[in-house]
Length: 606
Ligand SMILES: Nc1ncnc2c1ncn2[C@@H]1O[C@H](COP(=O)(O)OS(=O)(=O)O)[C@@H](OP(=O)(O)O)[C@H]1O
Image (cartoon, rainbow, N blue to C red; front, top):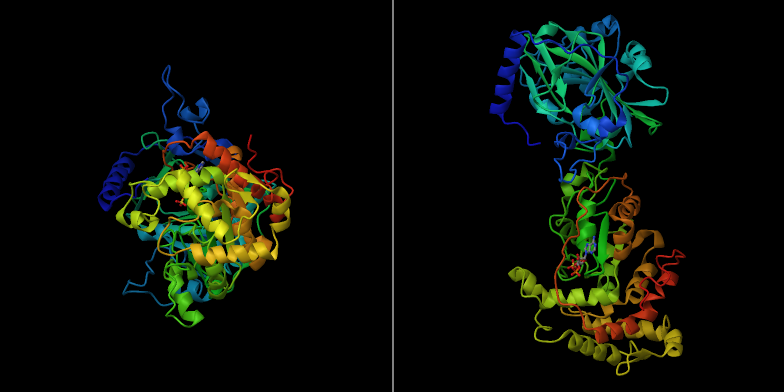
């Protein structure tokens, strides 16, 4: 939902004033218990889909009855809130913002005064709501995924008086994750919106009006659509839960501030509370929350997708970037460790500074929950050059990813990309022109000549298209092979063109081995494109989130990226390539030390 413009907000406020003056009735209090999970989990946009007409496919996954009547608010009881009123009364209706020239003298019992909050509680850099001038007393706070719950020093002052409310509202297995007082200034409208993010689906939000000068002048509405929003009774002590993924809006048409206690809880256990110290600062971004103390604790970048080229790396990068805690690099494919590497920079510090310029490094320093990374698929093959640079510059536990795909299919996709005339001028330039005018088979043959010259595939009979398995088994993994591989990388991995490595980029064992020698196995996650297709994107991504140490998050857009249409390969060439790659493929399981079926003969050819 696009943010409302100032004009729209003014119009909504005028409409609210009109409704209040006309005496719009509140909906009757209904004690429906907790808002059911499905009502919270079905996005409003889906709820708004009209039921399908005959012959039309159903657009929404929501059950029909939800389309008609999602629970949008429910009374959760009522309570005498006098003791809480006393606590928050002082100064609640005054404007303590810094720009107020008539700031009153500091009173130590005034919780609204930011000067007190600054010293005695914790300062939170302001989320969007504060743009509307809302003031808050925050007692308990958490991030979107409820991975961290912060208890602020003022929690202790308020706990005894809000405990009866919590006892009434929280279920037996409930964990409180947020508690705050929000003061809405007079004449302010929070326009119609619905909350989004992981927490909305999992949490239950309860409002308790505490200080409401004249409840008839406060208009709090919620409903499945803007047109069907209903007014909720905001008498002090009326505890109500709202479905915050439904449309809601609030207008204070009174001449005084309005204060609500807002609590969020989840079912089941949450993380242990982190007790914050008085005077600390926490930084909140759209989805994350961090202590300023933890600033710089996660270095940038956190991950690199090394390759293989044409194995689905663009999709993986895109899916990772859909996580709310991931911030894209300034560009995809930084190449800062291969052709953009700057040899003139002599110290590691300068090299690091240079490489970090490709990322939003400064922004990320304050948000250690968030991370960023790179996808440069040429790195996998170019291990000779890239590994020492990476180890020197990014001297921390870098999470590495390798995507692999049937090397026969990968080769054709590579050829189709390099020989395509489509693309930007820069893309065409970096792909190189060496393969233009050559058939797929010619490129294969040229590459085999180079490999044979380096002594890399002595077991392969280029003419007959067969592997001498006895020789293969002896040669594979031997020092001779390592030497030949090194020679090949030295001679045939250029920096100025993408027209190379049609076959070697499909020799995954040879490519992955140097990385496994240089880094502990838990740095590297190898994924198979075909498994992503079979098991589904979400299943692959849960492995990815775990590797990145990020909370699980469903990917919204699963469409494959960077796809291309091209002619199929002729069956003879296909057979030839399958024979070439087959013994190499079968070694993957042992190199990855995996007994999973996925790696046991990963691409069985007929
Ligand atoms: N989810 C999913 N399922 C199936 N196939 C997929 C998926 N994502 C990407 N792809 C295919 O991967 C090919 C592009 O790979 P890359 O993005 O790594 O290419 S590149 O190296 O960045 O140019 C490209 O292959 P071709 O279409 O054969 O060229 C994509 O179609």
